[in-house]
Length: 67
Image 1 (cartoon, rainbow, N blue to C red):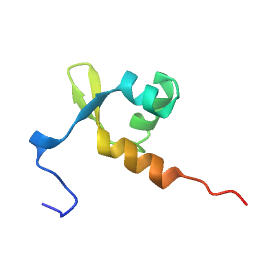
Image 2 (image 1 turned 30 degrees about the vertical axis):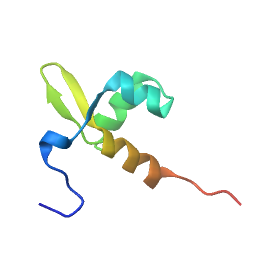
Image 3 (image 1 turned 135 degrees about the vertical axis):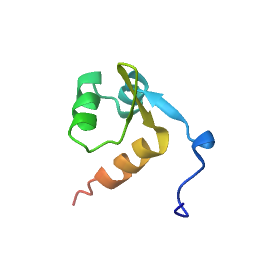
């Protein structure tokens, strides 16, 4: 296990709706990110769950600095 990985029992999963709220985007945008491979997710039945840390990592890595 990598040093930055937590045991699965400690991982907090968010629904697509919760991710959309955190990121202030539509649920469709979250689905596009998941299907495009930009945001990791697991499938539970017919829905997706996104690790909370993945959302934070995505936002951090997508941060754009302006002049």
